Structures are given as structure tokens and as C-alpha cells.
Length: 92
Image (tube, rainbow, N blue to C red; front, top):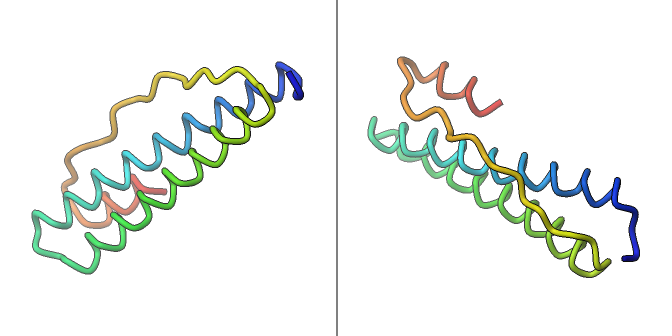
């Protein structure tokens, strides 16, 4: 392995955060889609894609450095929001 176990663990934790953020953005995008707020929905779908790409960059780095890939369990995103403000706050 070309990186330390501690660094690999930190990368795995970050991968989990990036995938978790992506899922939360998808949930927020779906909320806005259901409310027919198309521009907001698309904005959050794009942000979800960006977070997923971040996660994949970390995955590739771990693989390139022969680090152990151990993606942590990812909590389910918040799926329902009472207001648009609440949806945006969930994305922060």
C-alpha cells in the first residue's frame, strides 16, 4: 500500500460523506420536482452529480495508491420537507 492506513480510512470516511451528500441533494431535488420548481430541482440534481464525482475521485485515488476501499454505511437522506427553506437547510 502506497498510503498509510490512517489516510486510507480518512479517504473512506470522506467517500461516505460525498455519497451521503449526493443522496441528500437527490432527495431535495425530488422535493422541488414534486413542487414543480424545475430550476431548483435541476440545480440540486447537478449538485448531486458533482458530489458523486467527488466521491469517485477519492475512490480512484485509493485504488491508484493500493489503499483499502471500505465505503462506510450511508444514512438515508431526509426525504420530506415542510418548506423550501427546510429542504435547502437539509442540503447544507
